[in-house]
Image (cartoon, rainbow over all chains, first blue to last red; front, side, top):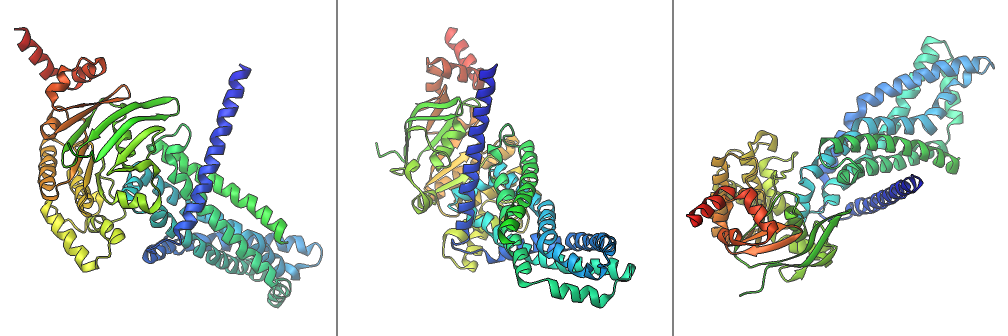
Length: 263
Length: 258
């Protein structure tokens, strides 16, 4: 009984170690794929449209309501201390340092990361990746690198858009609906937000982009190696679930680590 | 006899605790057609992936065109793979590309031909395989037989020395299967490639074969004809014959008895 448990634990540990090793090698090969010829410029543009431009509606919607909620919560909290004029800086700092990068990454995981994982997983299952290798075409250069570059381009831009829309959402709630002075809203923001805050947001969004594309495409690429899933629809379904869960956790974990390092 | 183009020597391959190949030995001569047959799970597709370098043997040697493919990496492996054409079981066409783009892919990626020359070459091959007018369709819009023909067209683009066919007629009706075999014979005559066919289409596929390799019990045995297989005394081979060629085998036994 005890021996069986120890055996299972050992087996599981070996599987996790193997999985981490595979994913580590995958990241190196994916980054290496960026520097191999021929460079697929048109595919990078197409992926930027799919991952970036097509995510704009969901980013607008999420940012607007996040900003409005921050405006509401911030106003009633700050008013208790007679500091409602600081609403602009509270909304802007919350968005630029934390909520903008994190929520944008989570939205991109849900909208584009899951799709990337399913696409690569289906390509693996239907031998399309094997076919590329047999034609002497590097799948990392051909498939993964354009997605990687497109995500690294898109996510910081989406984060900046998220921040701007969120700040206007806070303005609508705080100034238009609750009567905070518009001059105080923007003046407080201009005084409190410094370059380092914007730099922190951009660094975070770049790191999150790498995490999202690494985990989402990696789970799809190794769909056949997921324990107990095997090939087929169930494998893709499990890989997609893992991609969304693992990359969301990774974003939150790295958000803490980066904040601790950069503050 | 000339140097084998593909050679397995004492090849062992396991997946976890399951040993699929247990010291498999066989050789394939250039310019000939070899059929790899065997029941499910006997390592036919594993053998194909070992030949392509998609898997590595745990023990033993897999030599392809005089090179041990398990030891090749990067450019050397790619150069060797460019001498292969592969028709996968489900054709393995890239879903996001049109027929034209799928067939043009090896030329775009692996040659310096201009776009116009690639287009001309692709259109000529598509016409030869009866696919004219379908260039702009996507794989999801094609029938199973058409997908296989597009897969064959793509595999032939780099004029391979070795063509590997993984279950080329699976999922096709008898008429479409015959069409695939006809195209196979035509293209082999034209390009002169060495063909390796993994197939369940037994005994029909034997009409095309110069050599038959039966995979059973982790071993591979070579036979010159279907009759040789039927004469084998190996229990695993006899079981394979009973399952796949039962009618012929039984009728010939009955003839001998009478």
